[in-house]
Length: 139
Image (cartoon, rainbow, N blue to C red; front, side):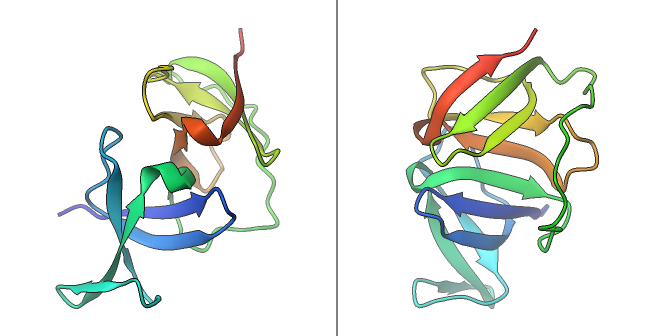
């Protein structure tokens, strides 16, 4: 069983970090196994697990390391071969991410991007469409 490290960033500013093995972009929710947590948790195989509703999120950030480096600023200057179309995503909270997508569709609840910074802690991000102010394709 492969467990992906994920940071769930909610539209209301909350953040939940942990691991998941059941994220699917077409499902309404997924589960994160936490190292510590809250009353909402359910114990599964001795791990604390929280169900995350996709529509409550700004995005699901699949990361290299759960701690990350808050002082590092991504530069978004790298080319990602085979990454698809280059896109600029502006969230309603003002955050901007530039990356590459192969799966953008206005009909889906979200889409994946790979950040255009190979040194980023983010490997890929599932952007929730309802948290986005603007999507611009970059030539």
